[in-house]
Image (spheres, one colour):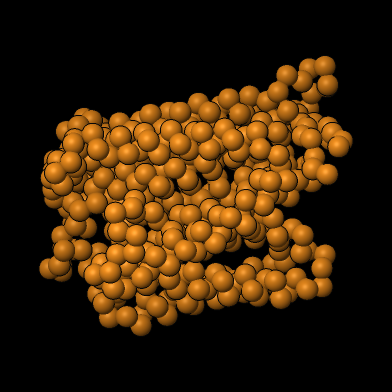
Length: 390
């Protein structure tokens, strides 16, 4: 084993320090503070948005909050294990998570295609295979693609990955959500770029996926009808249109300052999925434009710290940390923005859970895991060294 020592930087500049001045970057601590604020405020807003839905379902008013806390507890334990796990094992966990993610997505697809008449693993928690597959795909790209840059067979590997991506996009578009297909597409584009895949291959990837998404959107009358009913909710008469119009009304009534936490009206049975994929409507109604702006600033700081971690890893030639840090940071921010845009019908599609805020236990679990990995990588790059694998 050997140790590589590199330069350290402070949080917001590229100022170099001598070895005697090094005391570790503040970025990991800053990142923990950002995550803690988003987590605590997210739990408050999740409870505020979900207690009425839980009561209407015959559950205790704190059911969804308890679910999130439980998933968060196990995520912290898992994240702690990942923090101390040898680097070589971390790089290969996609061997386990990727097949499991495909299985979860397949279960989701089968249940949707049978219109819930056949529920596989009924009685078990509803686990979102899309979130898991995006997480695992990032780890796959980070491990595989940098190793392919200098190999003649890389074209075949890229082709196999593109075909897999098209299959995943098809399933997400037809059985899950257009937003999840967009999230997968954008995250993989960031991961491929960070892996320094040749630009022509990235262009092919973008063209293939965009073409498939447009084709699927235009080829299904049901999907197209749902698409336009969300795009113009006040001109259609359907459940999707009613849900979309109520979301817009909730956001509009929030105004600049909001009605106050716990004072949302539209969460009281007027918006389906208000505790999960449309939670932004309740957030905007309760804390208003200024509150939403503050949340966005925290997510921008989250993204900045992730980009800084990736930048430092590039300086030390650590492709894996570069790809994972950049991809996870952008993925969480992309997902937040998509959740907000879908709630206000700018993206006229079924919604997507909002990181840290939505009462979706499994997605919450993965978000905390991703943050744990980001924290480890910031800790490594901030202090300028890591024991490298054999």
